[in-house]
Image (tube, rainbow, N blue to C red; front, side, top):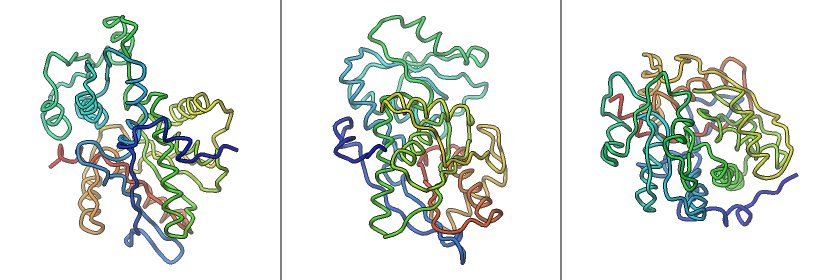
Length: 316
């Protein structure tokens, strides 16, 4: 059994990037047998919000300690992570280069518009779709210096794990403050490091909570790979358990959006005062709602609003 606590994690993080987020009920999701709550990671900031900020809390101090001269960041033009990390690179004066997936129609909206406010064309290396699966090898070939760091898509680097563990610690704080225990926790997943770190925390402290991972991108194999990364970091050999894997109930292909997703964005704004983005969080709430209704979940349920509201601006 691993006892995680802030005194263990804090030395690995920049405390200025750590935060507490509140929880509150979701009346339109709740019923006689189930009480549904939302964790407002989205309220942690504008340009960098949600669980991405937790990643950077430990990733940035590690980068600075290792004295890398340049950081290679990969992802899509509209990536929450790319936009967030570039802000960090500017703040901490870390030289960087972007390897971005080329799009046929580059529309400067949402994160794409923010990214082009932040950076110049000379810092961007566009990678054709056909080459994208080999983007890491390409970046390392073109930047062979040993003091160059390559950060995978989504910021899925082992140095981000301590910061992500603070999500679980903060949920414990929420539970203590409200005198409740969550029987189910829902979280969306892209590259799966955040969801795997949450599940790792759940197993490590021997909770009886069921973690529901909604794979907006990637899948169970990605989750298992990232869970193994958590084991490597903490030098443990835990097995993932108490995890249910789900695909979105609609628009299952990553990046796809349909009328149902956009209707959910509007409904959550009108009914609950939540801004969700159509790529990740709207699909999370849609899927969680259907599972709660169709399977008759009971007890206390927490849906983690992982942030990324800047992505919504690309659809307005």
